[in-house]
Structures are given as C-alpha cells and as structure tokens.
Amino acid sequence: MLTHNAGGDTLGIVSAVRYANSTYNVDPNRVFATGTSSGAMMTNVLAGAYPDVFKACSAFAGVPYGCFAGPDMWNSACASEPLSKTAQQWGDLVRTGYPGYSGTRPKMQIWQGTLDTTLNYNNFAEGIKQWTNVFDYSTNPTSVTSNSPLRNWTRSVYGPNFQAISAAGVDHNIPTQENDVLAWFGITGGAGTTSAPTSTPTSLSTTVTTTTTTAPGTQQTHYGQCGSVYWTGPTACEPPYTCQYSNDYIPNACKDASTAFLLGFAVMA
Image (tube, rainbow, N blue to C red; front, side, top):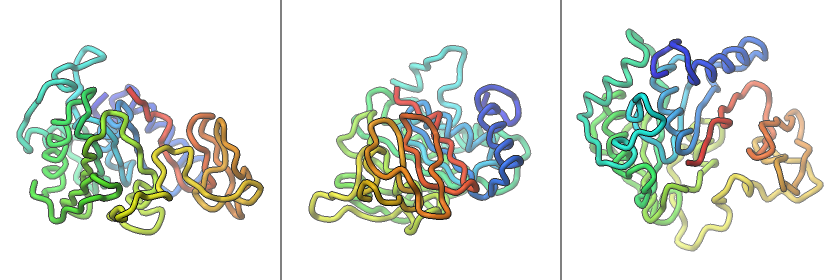
C-alpha cells in the first residue's frame, strides 16, 4: 500500500521496525531503508508513506514513488515507456502517502544505470523531479561530480537531503555501493561525495560479498562482513560488536543492536 498505516507490505516492514524499536531499544534516528529494483521501489514507497520512521534511504535501479501503482504486478507504462509527469505531480504523489504530515522527511539517494532496459532510464529523471519537489530544491543540481563513486558515474547533488547518481554504461544489474550508502546514512565517515581515482580502484567492491580486506582468523571491525554463504573471512567481531545475522545470502555485519537495516527486501528483477 502507498498510504501510511493502510496495510500491505509497507506496513508489514514498518511493523517489524516498530517492534525492533520498542523491544530492542533501537535508536529511531538510525533506521534506514535501501534496496535494488523492486527493493528500490519499496524504498521509495517507505520514504513517502513513512517519513516518520526512516531517517535516510538509498534506492538502486528503481522508479519514482507511485509510478508502479496499479492493479497488476507489472506496470509496463512505468517500466518500459518514457512516462512523464511534472515535478509538482510527482511531489504530490509522495505527499499523499502521509496526508497532513509536516515533519522531517528522510534523506533520499537514487542510483540508475543509463543502459537499464528493465526499468527505463527515464525513471531516473522523473525521480529527480519528484524528490527535488518534495524537498523544495531546484531541478538544477548545486554540484555535479564526475567519476563518483566509480569511473563514468556522475553524482548530482541538489541539496543536503537529495542526490542522484547516474551510472554510464551500466544496465539494470547496477553494482550496489554499500560504502557510499553507509556514508549517506551518516554511519561511516564521509558524505557520499567521493570521486574515483585516475587508476582503476582496487579497494571498492562491486558486490556486497567483498567489502572487507580483514585477514581470516582475526576479529572483524565495525560494519565489516562476518558471515554469509561462501564467506571465508573472520566470523568474530571486535568488542563490543556482534555478528548480526540477516540471512545466508545477505552479508552479515558486525554491528550493535541499536542500528536497524532493512536489506531483506532488496530484490533484483
């Protein structure tokens, strides 16, 4: 459902967050959402319908809030055609997600590859129109950084709460940039604005299964990977952190119980 507390998968996810907040004393200022493809669609919906729950969001290869709405599981007009609305129309869709809400909205970061044929690259431009309207920003970016965070990727910043990264030559299977997302969430250092070096980067991973260089047998550092299928690195975390299990296919990380990540709904179409 696209509307606050109206049921559906969104309320199911938010109910889990609310339970974690009340049961495990989770810091409500450290609850975030991220996803790819349909997970990115869900991220947009959560940001619009539950701005009081999430503090920052990052969506890879998704569509604007409300774009995929309809009676069928697949919306060809949104996915394949150059659907266009005004910034005001897109922004109004977000605002209808929680009618009357006037509080702070979560920071939003969107990513898409220029060769995406599963979800038309036009959705990237429409998403920019949507979120700049929501945050009352100009559709002209305040800064544009080439090769950020990877070569041929371009980061456009529209204000402190919204940025959009276009990945030239990349299809729907866009490599997630977990380090950048953590910086965007304010969990790690930096502000998610770094550029790629002139030589081919060797420390940046393109899959979430190679995010650490810690030697096997040692203790993993905060937010470092500590498990998942085929993982051969360290499984113990340096104090006071513990290895937080998600599932066998999402990298488990060394975290404390006060940080909640919604990564389980990240789905590649």
